[in-house]
Length: 567
Image (cartoon, rainbow, N blue to C red; front, side, top):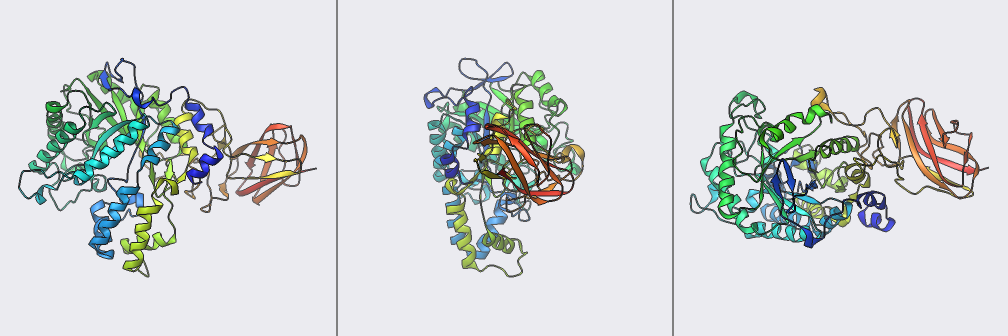
């Protein structure tokens, strides 16, 4: 559903009403945040739980968000586009993308939903030239347009009463062997292989701190996203087995020192190696107003999964923050957030939007885009022409990516913001049964946790924990992000296996018996208000007002709808 329709139908009320106990503060109430006794606190000393989303894909594009996983890094994608449509038209597409991906409407949506913070992943190249392109070696050319975009975002977040975290996602040269994350070109010196790239990184953070030192609406500076580099053990590739990591800690110390020369107030967030999680060799914290970030993907949501970071919090006395997580199912989201908030830890999930279904907003594309994507990756049987590709990509960048044209996923918001604290079941869509009857779409089952709103055998991806293959929780990858398989057209529940079930809250104009007709394939039953289940051709008894209907599979099945006809 487009978000305008969501507003019109007030379908987010079921989500946002649950946030009334912890609303975003008014703009005038934004306070400086700081580290104190292992917690992030405000100016009064009250603990603050940051609940946010990262604006992944805006200032730094990663291939998987655009269905261009085979291309990976932003510079590769942009190069392929330029080769197809021409450099000038590629530049126009990129500018349009920056202009339209995130606007004030996106930020207002986040605030209305209940988020209180935004994490901004920054690409250094929007703010300064690469070191080898500087007219004067060792100098820094600053790009005002990039800083202006941060200024605009800050104005929007302040107006919405939200804190902003600045995150250097792509540092000069790139900070890891997971190339797409930092737009790293392995043919050029990395951040760690180039003293000049390190110097420029320090200078960039000092420039940012000078510009924003008086802004309490900026919660923190997240110095370096997901380092994944082998400082000690070259064969490991991503730094997960490193023990000392001296250069990692030295650079973050140097950045902190440069920041403190111009800004003594802002919270500084550091990240460990191994995508933010290896803190070996850290030693004694070098700043009193510092926090530790960790990232969490595709593992179990149990105490063991957070024990290392909790231990580090106790040992260092520093706050910890789940700076990035997501790319999973609603079950995983709710469990992860419940876990970390139970330990007083805030979070920023990833991302706000992409071409895909498992985040708050979805960028919708069609066959024309798929044809262009196949052309860019070299997989098209009939490549798209330059003019066709330009038209499609400019439409993506100037229209499709804009908030008003995105599809909103209220079930994702519900999983992130309500379900960690409230396991009640609420209607996903209004189901009204008139005196004559009515039809319920199978895909419009209730909002709520697994085991209460529905039951499915495959509900999340835990491949990091299992060491196995990635698990799809919704094989159709569309419409909803629960462990319920939905056809790619969003109209049918598929792979509906024996023992799986779906709950529907319905409102009947009158009580009485209603004949049941299940549209679909395979053995299924329907029960009402806990009474005996019946198959198609049977009847259920409804009460006047609210009723609970359960559709259950007794074998290999798929379901389109349940029709109730008054007898």
